[in-house]
Image 1 (tube, one colour):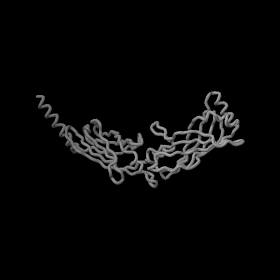
Image 2 (tube, rainbow, N blue to C red):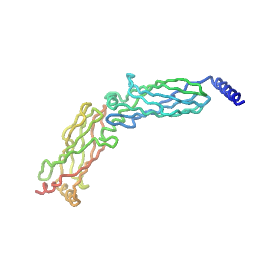
Image 3 (cartoon, helix red, strand yellow):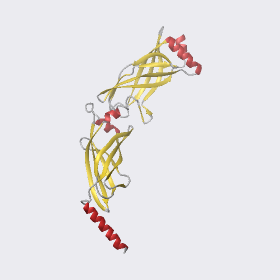
Image 4 (cartoon, rainbow, N blue to C red):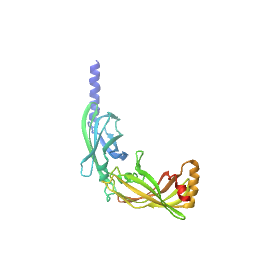
Length: 294
């Protein structure tokens, strides 16, 4: 009796399936979003969100779906797979996320100085079932990703994933005049992504113990490319002696003479001029008061 009911149920389901013009393959109806979610010197992760539609009158079980990210020459640069079986209700669609991991430097090289966006192809192959009947399907869609917009935010911040790419090496007093002192701040910039850019300037104001003491800028511009992983530079500040002494005295009372630099990073990169605020801080030489007063 139970077997008869099962056969009848299956028969009715098959008839209903036929009335819906048989099993239709799921389709990727839309590439919902593509964005860089993490970037390190070695690896980057791009999240691809796909809208997968079930056109059938019954729920669809998506067993497999492998997604490939191809460059404009259709060479594979990254792959991701569906981690778990997904059920899509009848006549519905679900947004599925795939994290594609790829090497950072080839991605950076894709960004030319002329193109505003980078062209990719997103392709995939999958296997789905409706009422136990399985079917293979595939898709192939072009996509333009504004990698420049995401990469340009990394450069002037000089940091990524919590790691600082701008490191102060030392602060020295170079020249002491009657009313003005020249302060040099020596720093190191790391370029782990192999980006090509020109660090054109850093017009800034320096504060000593919260008091404005002078202005400065880069001593020389710094050029970077894919073969230059780090480079040292110098910022030169002209300090007002009276303001510096007042700030230093205030700081000396606390046992340390802290300074803060506030300015704008000027960088030419990715075919654009990037201008972004940047702040850093460190400590003056402990003997600066003695040097200024002698």
